[in-house]
Image (cartoon, rainbow, N blue to C red; front, side, top):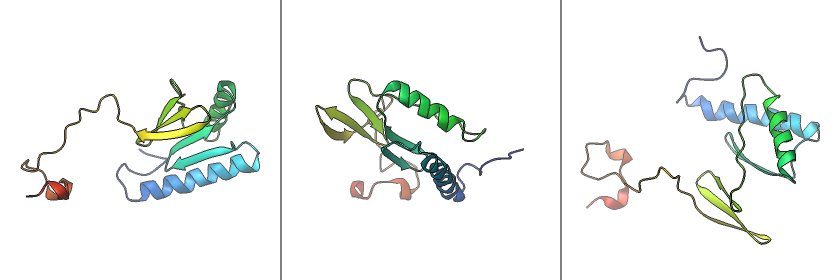
Length: 127
């Protein structure tokens, strides 16, 4: 029996996630715990922290906000970090972005003649 959350795929899912995350962010802001740079898309967050120790402490704070939540942390590797389809690259004092593809990406696209509903097929491949 599910007690917390909404069913996967429910149209209410993103709305409820946003409401809940806004509630948590208000708690963090009131407590003076919100990082100076903090960006979020649904439940993916990007925060700039002064050190790895500060990031670990913030992660611990986040995980203590609600018993059903488990946040994870990803640290930059070679001054690069992926975030929702982009890769943010620190180049000296500048930040640059580029398209991020997961290591499991095969580069394969859906063939238009495949037996897949047309709504999943790219408009530009129709001939």
